[in-house]
Length: 251
Ligand code: PEP
Image: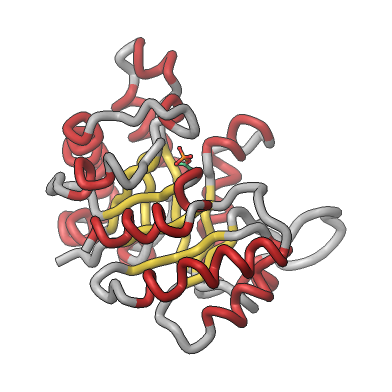
């Protein structure tokens, strides 16, 4: 039985003060939904303040990115141990990182291995672009991202991952995939690829989320699909009442 999982990716939004206000608005609603693993991923600058607000709750905190090296001359980067001071999770390989900051399957793999080595749970993002989708290449792209992004992991390490299937054309566009299509990619491509690499038990146990224009209005369409275990939510996670409704829909 896979516990439902909903994470909010705030992207590059909210000052510390604004982040505090948003969390105080959503906290009571989120705390009431124990059946769902709930995770907030604010920008780095707010992690310390939000960690303090979430302390003593069962709501997790995640970073949106991380470097794979432990320390050194990497100006502007954040090391795994720095993330681990505040967080239990880290989003890795988000399509915005791949598109705008040159992340590749190889760098995602380095980050995934570094996160696991530091006791963080990676939320690994995969998904095809519109051109790849229209060219019928979804299965090829998504399976390659898994094979290369999760290369050299042990089955035990892989069993602790969370994967977010986020078709790039659905992120921030208001044009979500259909629940059935997303379910098919997870059931026919993602879990079989995981099974080939790590065995059936791991493939059936890993939580796979859908991400891409999830709202309170369409969340149930995804959460009622048998292969989908929750959502990575961008824009709608910045609205307290709407994010709480999405979490409630996952319960
Ligand atoms: C995301 O940032 O991972 C995302 C899915 O964004 P949005 O929900 O805004 O499409």
